[in-house]
Image (cartoon, rainbow, N blue to C red):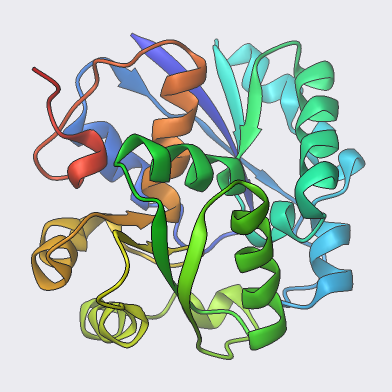
Length: 239
């Protein structure tokens, strides 16, 4: 059994994680909820949400769960710090937890490379300025963003209410024929149940926040053999 500890801000789409657990063999995904503070996709609120103090408050519970790695399961609350700041955030988290640590923002960068995506389209729930910060983060990771669709949603609570049709609509709005993959960066968005349909609609890899978060934690724990036909090309069996 491989245990990946997840620090998740507030309550929104965390039920994606037990769904992933049922699709992967020998994987345990304990979730510890961090204090979200103000629920707002706004730079100052996101920086506060991702502060070292808020993240450190949850690490002891994850250690007790037997976690082998820890991932800050929040995209906007990590890339908002910029490339260097996001590295400092994960270094502080690793030090507090005494475990390998990462965040969903780095998970996207690593997962894009894993599926061979040098050019990506971003289909974001965020306002435009926050979406632009994610595009800038990906550029710093050496990934070309050919299109970035911002939906203008301010709160995670609203994003969490989106169902299948709205998620598929977001994908179609954000896709671009020049892109090797589509990235859907909000961990408040329910996507795991829709991954096969999303990839069929796009005709290319689709990377979503809760999906890549788990993949990143398994990568850190050196568990690279976990696969599922229901979790997109990122989790496809490697022969």
